[in-house]
Length: 368
Image (cartoon, rainbow, N blue to C red; front, top):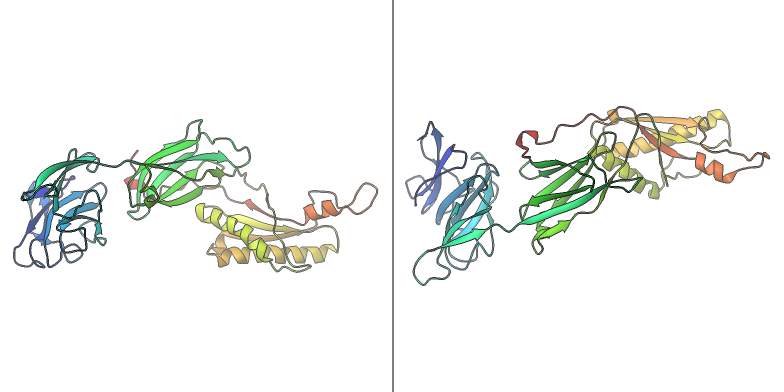
């Protein structure tokens, strides 16, 4: 076969049975310098086997190598495999499956357009021949992932929020968009990929969503769950409902941990935020007793967050006792107000430091 120069012009790839290989024809590469190839280097046992490797094609944008081999478990004969890497390390090659592969020999992928290497191209195969390779045209199967971003309180589409699609395996930012009035995002994704979607807006808590595009194998598109972003203001408390403690103690009940887990997720999605966890009591008991109890309860919440991997430097525990009621502890006729006291026995958190806009995880690889 003819040698292949990668889409970025940095490498020349070819198959050869020259000395120093693993078996039959191996894949080799040369580093290009001013259009001149350097010394040949074997692509190693991560790619080559004792059997046949042929037809290398490398997409520099996706860091993806496509080649044919009969030295791995496939559908029969030479099959197309793909591996992610950068000529330093390679992932374990994965069979590209039907319909690209067949029970016979499938070899020599070439792109129709190097600016979009896997949108369309040609392969050689003897799947419909009794003697020889024939050329087949292929078109990429389009997969679409979409979803809706809304405000948690108003339930309205969150216009102006940004949504970023990241490939978590290749550690690459694929695309970043700003939402219009519909609040919907739509991304084209590749099969057999692990993705992360990050939704963010100023003065809203960022949220992340992970999904595997294998879920799209049997359908052309997938609508991700609707994400709601919660608005916040610096130093403005947010009440956490359904946080309970043992009577007159600071021990968290099991049902409280599920609520605190939502705070764990929020803090992991917003790594630049520092919060104060606070606990409050009703008016029953002395000031000193309630301050001590509420401080212990706030500390129990902080300790739980730390146990889930949140840095202690991002957390402050504060017990306010009965000093900050949000409802009357007693009625105008001086009778007890159980409903008001229950509202005052609460756990809150507030953002102490404004969230810094975090640079995209893989910003240097962003494509708009």
